[in-house]
Amino acid sequence: MAKKKARKSRSGSKKKKKRKIEPKFKIENIVASANLGVELDLYAIAQRVTDVEYEPEQFPGAILKLKDPKASLLLFKNGKVICTGSKSEAEVKYALERAIKLLMLE
Image (tube, rainbow, N blue to C red; front, side, top):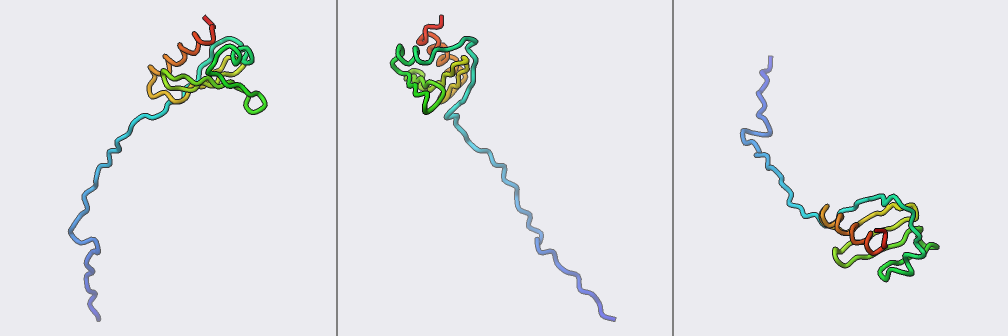
């Protein structure tokens, strides 16, 4: 009768330490949506406001580019707005407030 030899574990006695991964991040861009609750005349807005681009053949919304805060807003006829480029909720709020004043909705 042959004796069986005990096998040694391949992992051995050394155990790997688990590293805790803690990524560092920075907010670069927030996308927010809002509803102004009014219909927008995009043709009139594009003629009246200098920083608005509106080409309905290309895209159904007008694009308002703000410099302060640095943000872009997509304006749609039904009053919906998409705000991109802000880095905080406060910047989104400020961008929407500026847009409302520029569009003379108040």
